[in-house]
Length: 198
Image 1: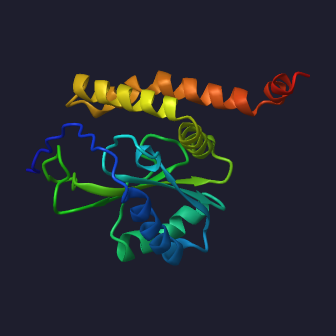
Image 2 (image 1 turned 180 degrees about the vertical axis):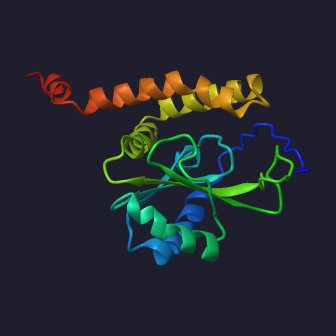
């Protein structure tokens, strides 16, 4: 019988090593799957300077086509030690995670290798979820007040939903959607005309 996994949401204070950890992994990914990847980006909270995050490096990979995801599975699994979980709840996304024998804070190692260090979200060109991850990251990077608000919300929700990762993620949805709307307004031509007084 598989060992149960005990999970409590753990937010680590911002670690200035996270960008370098991403760059190191991006170099490995480029060597392993670069011929099929149109772009490799650092996303998620560890990509936003100064805010607390679950200490897992989130990576978004933009593929030339979804068929190329099949070509990426073998090098990611056999060469880099990732596990492929298929779409994992998001249509046309392929999700990979890399575990560690040493559980991260807040986790107890079990049958699903709960101590993750990296996770990859792989999308075909044009997938809206890829664009949303980049837009959300860039908006928070450019607006420190919004990033601090997001961090405060995350800490509050982590305490409220300490043992329920799904509830924690769902509770962030309204904030994420509000940021995406703000970013869309900032990029719209009418917004630019208003700023110029036209």
